[in-house]
Length: 230
Image 1 (cartoon, rainbow, N blue to C red):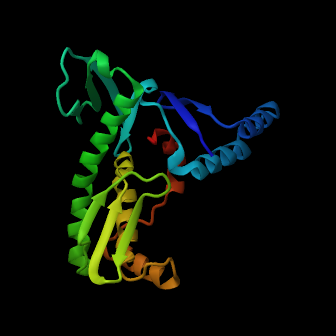
Image 2: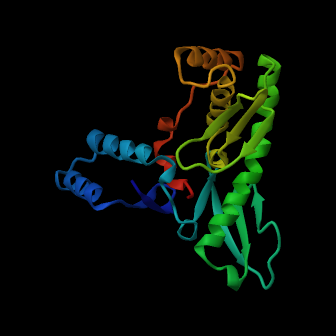
Image 3: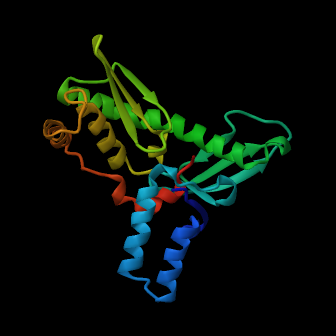
């Protein structure tokens, strides 16, 4: 299911959905059901869309970073400068530098992706150190890659029992640290059990307790899906 959300303001956005979902929306509107049924349907639809939900960076006035709104400011320059952006974390302003040749949606989305990729590594490394102290475990390889359907992945090699790779989705930089920590613990627990078995969840909840962390999932952030980037 493809969903596009154009953000107009912190609490105002346009939802573009396939025709069958539009008809469902219209049914709720005509019946004047804007409370629990409508909210439940909307949140369920957004969660189901998951990381496939998409917002056009060229049509938004802000982005999310650590669960806070950052105003997007675009500055036209005669010459491109790297890293194409500047972040004022006190004023919560994300400034993108561009030239006339780069004045397109793809460029703006690419710059935002670069920002998340840079930040997610700095945000994840403290959790690697923290849970190495508690468990004696850490990935032999830590990667950061965008996924459409998950926040992280774990990988082991049969031919090399010591190899253990964790890949974290940079999109997690949008949310609060509790979701990132929960995701990292989830992937770390796969070191003991690759399948989502009873044993896996015993390990997962044990690691959560060791780090006094929360069990957080995407369902706790249904409306923030609107900030997802393809």
